[in-house]
Image (cartoon, rainbow, N blue to C red):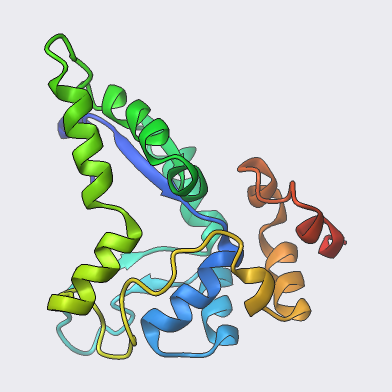
Length: 192
């Protein structure tokens, strides 16, 4: 879908799958168990149905680990990986390398820093949530209460049961470890 001759590179945003479970459940209006199954399903795809037209091109996603690996290790394209958690903790510091990766880092007149600061302010989760409350959000699925639900890092600790956490760790432990998602005491306590 993304030929190398017309693709300069890929900015790949990765997020802890433990935190993704409830976001996916909200997005699809389903249970945590069903959301977790999507993350673990090697046959997961957008537009799963082939019997009717959909508003999106069908794409095989695979499981969370397969999706990450397909972009980071197998795309054949230059890839810059950004962790959602790093963007959340320090947006400007995480965004600056993205700007450089995209070749937009010429700041000889100081305007690039100002543009980055403006982009960070306008993409702040609280700001996006406020805009959704006031004007709605076109991409919000009908089943979702809201598109910008919480955006919290580590929310899984109060939202997921131990069996769900263990199932995700069993399915994705090596990939989670690779991206620094098994370095917390809470997650390591669940690892077998």
